[in-house]
Image 1 (tube, rainbow, N blue to C red):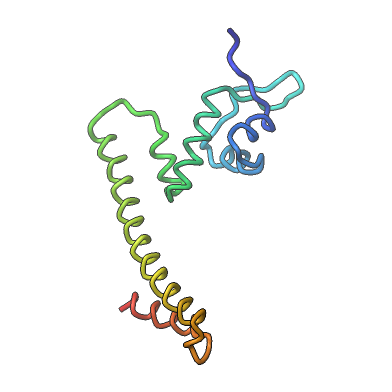
Image 2 (tube, rainbow, N blue to C red):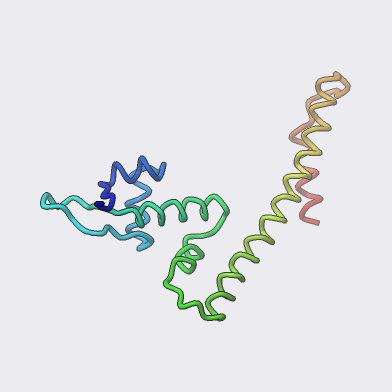
Length: 140
């Protein structure tokens, strides 16, 4: 059975990414075309698609391109490489926990203000002021 071959348009469709993003990842050396057709078009294989899906998932998880590059580097299974990837994940997890806390604070402020606005108990719509106060408290 022949291995799947993709042109950039097909790859973009299957990876659910714009072609401009794929070209950007190529410039950043995160993905490399497998070869070129006789017409000099880039072509990719199934591993290219899987790599793009990994990059997309990692980006949605908040990993930087440098983090992703490090995770995509060939690994020989050594403990130092595993520790490095584990450190990247641990760092990202801590950032995610911080973001969750900030979003929970925002949710409380917005819920309270929305309830006041809907009940007509607020002399003025004070959402912006409450957000400013909440932001100041989170810095303190």
